Image (cartoon, rainbow, N blue to C red):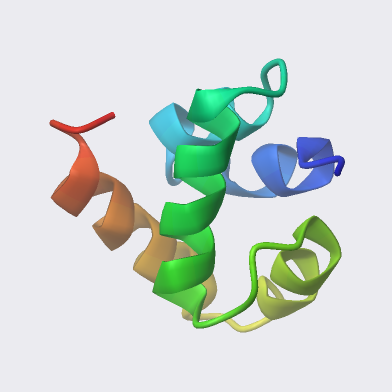
Length: 73
């Protein structure tokens, strides 16, 4: 799965999550993808998440999710 386009889109609003999903595949990607998909109410699939990012409220939801989970990240 390629999360790089999602990382580029959310980078300004949620830099920690963007850094994790834009990095090498591993536990960080899995955790960040789960947080992002949960915040948006989507499956953990970068193509579906990318489509969900068209919603104007999506970046705010992801920013809130990053803040709420920052200690775990």
